[in-house]
Length: 262
Image (tube, rainbow, N blue to C red; front, side, top):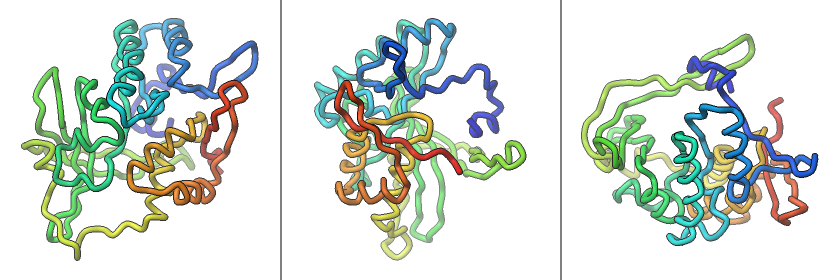
């Protein structure tokens, strides 16, 4: 919410899903099984124009690395967008070890995630051979317009209200070229960042979870293991973050969320 506020959003037009009700009982929301309820609520709200699913892998009930299962899992999302006349923005991450390849093919999980999307936008931190750091936001694919070019950007902290600080994107100059060229600046071992696996696991898990919505633990494991992390590293990261764990009595699956902000 603070990020929306600093961007000038009308809070009355923003809705957050933190669960669903079944017979008066509040249960965790699972995008893989509860899109019908989401559609009904969106129709009730009316004029919904944007739905953000973070992470998009959470809509896949099966194996997120199999094309057929990913396409099957994404079809209800496509249908939902068509019914509502809304855009659906799915958030994902790059897999490790794919530097130098097409960015769309580096999305965690099956290539079907990028294939089904009409537009794929990528954000990356690029380190040059001289150690200069640049943030790039670029088009990697588009079926409805140009499929190249983008912008430099930076992140700054802004105080929205007294005691409330949020991250804000500050856009820089326009850049030209393919996404592959833009995010593949030359690097050397001496200047490239050497990320500690433990910190990497914590930061990636922090990006996958929120404090006011349950996320299937399986989707966290799938996404993070595809990034080269082990189950032990993922579990240790969950302990370090103080992740709250809950089991869905109906599905038998485990769900995670971050603790409320202090």
